[in-house]
Image (cartoon, rainbow, N blue to C red; front, top):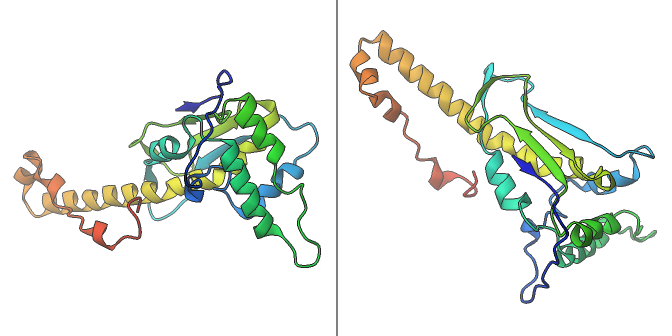
Length: 218
């Protein structure tokens, strides 16, 4: 799945209620990453990052969930001047010191404005991933991300915070698969191959977890 920059398109002004901060890509990162644009070596133009499962209870990972995050947060004209203003106002409060105040260099406003104005609000990154549902041995790359505009080298790892949340649906999917493998093994050992032959083993794992989780995403 690639999310690339395109020809500049005027972003229409928005009226009404303020932007939802939980849908503002300028704010969906770790606090310390807001300052990372100041810390890269001079002349940096490309950042290439990858996501992997380093290990765990199972040696195979069932990759799942990336498309949800891409389509909800990263596809289309997701950077607007309103969102930039909202993010800057928040970070001024968040990073202000009672004695030394706020350093205007912390929030990379000029770079975000470049994305909003010159790139039409589209994020200049490319993402490559294994197909959703693929079973991959752990310690292998599941997806990669890199910037496509040399002025936006800082953006790759700024977005990493959000996409690391893919670990949650991937973990749920991986555990569900392993549980089904256990069910299938014991169906075979207890002499009920007809259940598997008729596909009924796929309905032996019942999930009533929706009522107990913290969000629709969970």
